[in-house]
Length: 359
Image (cartoon, rainbow, N blue to C red; front, top):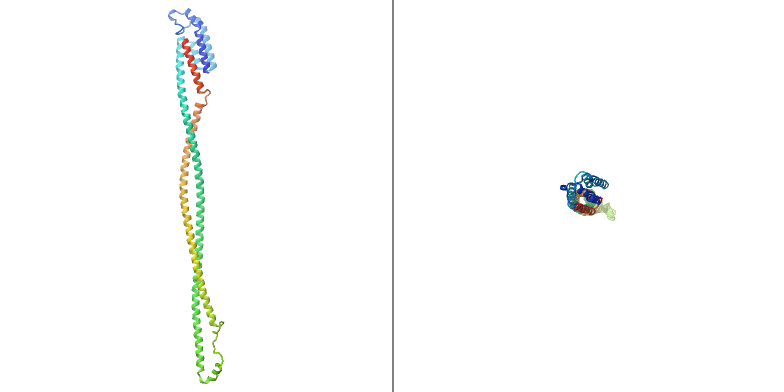
């Protein structure tokens, strides 16, 4: 578009500089109003109106075809103003194009700087978002694991304490039974010993009565006959006698006391050992629970902080992406590259400068 515009301006200048225009000026205009060809064009009189109209039509056609606002403006002024004003307009156009070139150079520098900075920002924020997301996922997994482990430890402690409670109840019941059995055995032994003492006293008195009867004169013969037989001992003689049974009973109750006491001692020792070991196990598990609970609290705080940082970083990344879309539309998605625009504008300025020389 720029090259077409420059070409049109060149052709217009060529027409203006031709003998059909300048020659007519030399022939028909007053000498006081003439200017040399090297410095400027003379004003056209009515005899040059046809050439001016050709110039205007040419510029208008090129302006419409190329969509050039500059050519359209020059065409309008060429049909209305003297060539001196056209020369001034060309100068103004050169200045304007140079200002546009400077502005576009500033814009290009701005775009390069902003695009580079934005790219770095997007890369950094994207990396931070990925790192925060990965760390957040890791912390959430750790939190879930700690929660499961704490629940498991709590269940284990509850189970152990339940076993302790059951063992304690059984121990108390067993101890109560054993204590009662031992006490009963002792009472029974005392009773058997007392009964044995009574029986022994009875049989001793019987033996004393038999000796007294032997001293009686009237019964001497009978005593002699009885003497030929064993003295009366009742049910105390022999292992199957009453005294033997009393000894067996006494021995049974003594054995019951001993065995029950031994059983009680063994049960008490077993209970004490179980309670010590289980208490130690509970203490270890409770300490581990406390440690994991503290770690869980720290993990929860970390997750909260990570979520906060992730939200903030994601917002910054979104802003950088939005700004990139704006920069892309302004700096990247252009129909003509910056280098091509620079080249076209330089040619345009050069053509206008050459036109000034001709004018």
